[in-house]
Image (cartoon, helix red, strand yellow):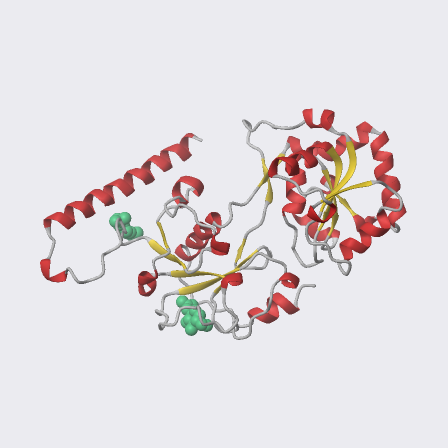
Length: 351
Ligand SMILES: *[C@@H]1O[C@H](CO)[C@@H](O)[C@H](O)[C@H]1NC(C)=O
Ligand SMILES: *[C@@H]1O[C@H](CO)[C@@H](O)[C@H](O)[C@H]1NC(C)=O
């Protein structure tokens, strides 16, 4: 903690110093003949790694100078100023904002040192594939663990001073057994088919606009707190695709019943006693019976919270963390790198 504060202090001192030097430089050596040149970016150190955010992902903006204070990543100059294209070491390009004819991608020649980072966090099923992306990108950024920059929520070791904010109090707040919040209802999805069978054997509280039960953020949190089990059913069974549908219940204190990639993939990231995988049950009724038996056995149920003694969930700060991690990655690698078969890798492999 102290070290972090010191780093943050040093960072902000450094920024101030550059600012001072620049202001001084500006006022002392202003060359009147160069006034038509584009303004130099303020406080840009010659060692800074420049990351050009080509689109604000889903139009979500954030403070550009926060890599150091938020993530202790130094030496980053994030910008959305396309005039810096020729100097940028990396260009961060959010897939969902690319037009299908590619007409809104950079059109100027790419400087030899520049890497394009393909950024994408939706499942392939919910994302149109765009022709022509095969030979454009150098670096992949995705939830998949085989991406160059893999970003996803994580269970991380607790430090001694981290307090559990919700346990064991959350146990007293339980007044529902199984809950599911679903916004994208599609009868074709495996998760809806599974639900339709499961509900024959156990009562499930359903939330979402479709059911006249839309939730505010607070309502959402309350559901996760008050339910013993939460159906963390992903919209696609796709490799490594485990989303906030899994991690939010873990944080808020309901036990996730997961449907998604195979169990061994979950087990790479989560202790196996922190979730229940539907594949472990031969029938829907078997799963229902298991949940009903846990409802009657507090000691057994409590075992699903044991991981909290050692771990906590680290959430992801989208898209700020992504831009800072892109900077960190580009800054630490000066190798030649291309990714030639993006469409095949993402849309065809890994189901
Ligand atoms: C830039 O990096 C070089 C070598 O890593 C270092 O010697 C120099 O002091 C740095 N300059 C600034 C302004 O940080
Ligand atoms: C980045 O990718 C492009 C397109 O494949 C390639 O021409 C370029 O050499 C790569 N740049 C680096 C620094 O690896």
